[in-house]
Image 1 (cartoon, rainbow, N blue to C red):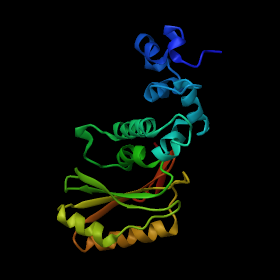
Image 2: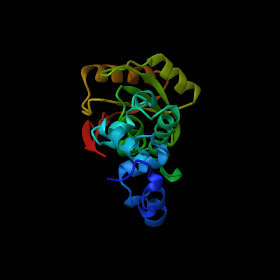
Image 3: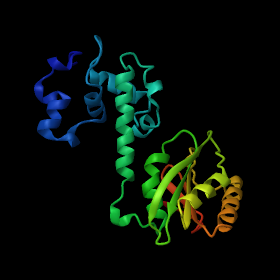
Length: 230
């Protein structure tokens, strides 16, 4: 069994040195997290802390990504600095995954919407609703969160969405929200709210192009009325 302090390990086994000499792909999840944590405690190394953090999430990075900084601090040795570093790292990862090339900012398929929004939404423990604003050429001109709800539902303000679309001179809207259950199939409330928004936007000659529901591994498109995998 290794000593608690990483400094006493053989150099080629220390996470930072291992990354530098062998590449990041050779490190385990715990070793990569240990680099973010930077240090352990008197009794536990940074790798020990990382393993404990992962153990509390069933060993799954996806579950860890769903956690806010606060709950992480329930582990002895993980304070605000370590917790916020991990939380910020996952947020950067989500933004990187959601980033699409400039030439692909023309949105013509539900798949493009899902690829862009799933990194933000599929691991959330609560529902969030976002709106994408498009011009007449289907170019994305902006996106914003319009509501954040509970475990099973979120209610958005139709008047506010339409008002902002008019202010942005948008020609089209795409509604996007997630189902924390992982199942993207729409419920009755999803269909009712979608139709109400479609009618309200049409009054101002703005088209509701689609409503995409993000699940854990799949998404549902109202425009296609079909469920697909990422």
